[in-house]
Length: 205
Image 1: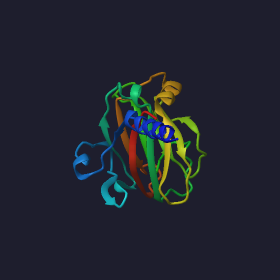
Image 2: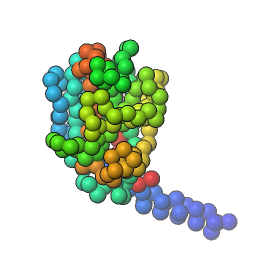
Image 3: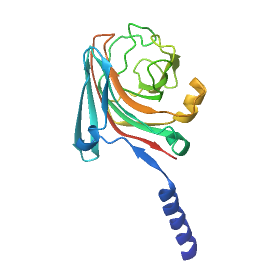
């Protein structure tokens, strides 16, 4: 019996050691690596810390700016899953996110092949209006897809895990991402929204 218990403990430790992660760092030092991207008025991003660690707060008022960083294109071969934890404090009211006028997202994380011309992007988004699993081509950009991963209206922290390598293959025929960006925007609806992000990381399992 002791031998059997030792075997299962060893197996658990081995699996934990073999699992790989690449985390986005929201500490004061990590925030220096995240570059602002967007246009017009700027979404306000501030970091904070609680008992569970560092988090990012996004507050948008008629603004559209993201925070992003470059990613090694080979990363998804080892860590194809993206884990995202959201909390929505203030969401939109009465917008149609299928249209240009309503194409804003309280919280989303973007991945794909980012470039000035011919980009192939996927936005992993929260929506209070569309069901989880909803997928569409952006009404603004042919090379961008909106994929709703969260419809949680609780106002509490909630986590979603997505195989982004498979999703990029299905939507764009690519199996890599060269960037990751956090993007909360309200420039089309002109409304005020507040969202929080934490524990955003790529993983092998």
